Image (cartoon, rainbow, N blue to C red; front, side, top):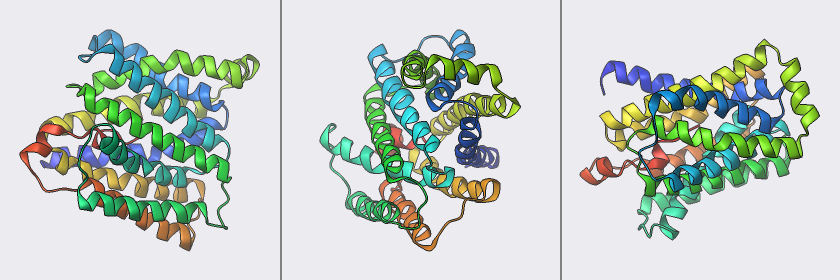
Length: 300
């Protein structure tokens, strides 16, 4: 990888890792579903007029928009609003790798590699250690929501496998556009019009900055650069960088939010990241270059 592209890959890892801390900042003044809707609104509205229509069938755009934009991010934001801290969220959400492999086996009839099966077992042990950690301050119910969000991420990855978008940024912009209206409707129903209006009226610079970061940094910059890297290099070269996202996320949460990592959670983190490594790292082959596994193209 060229030095410039290496720096771009590391920049995306940092942006996506810090993203979880920024979500916490945004949730301090904006309800979770409204925050998610605003993120996708500002990511989509300026860009759809510039980039043009997606180059894949609309059913795939709608499917990923609902699974990724509404279900995955909606549940993640709700879980974090209910007490799952940023660093832990960045780690547990990587269970999406497990779901993606399982869905590929069940739906796409793919034959799993032995390393993938070993990785799933290792990562599941890590997730179990987190759930059973008695010193964990996060509510178990909220933690389960993060795991369910990871499941929907796996669903969106499977749909993306069918779609095979040639332009990751354009695809993500339209996925963002699809998610806005359902998220706004759900916010009005569950969070209430008054709470939404009050949040918009009283929003401060921190809230505006969080929305801008989520929309333009994590979404447009992150997916745009990630898509560029996947067009320049095979997936086996780009994918391992995704292993650094939860490490950056947990480190940022520790430095910026004072989120401590206990011994059991630290062991769990090693198991989850190690399991991820087993499932995504593979030898370079022409097939790997052509497939561009979408579970390796979406990180945060």
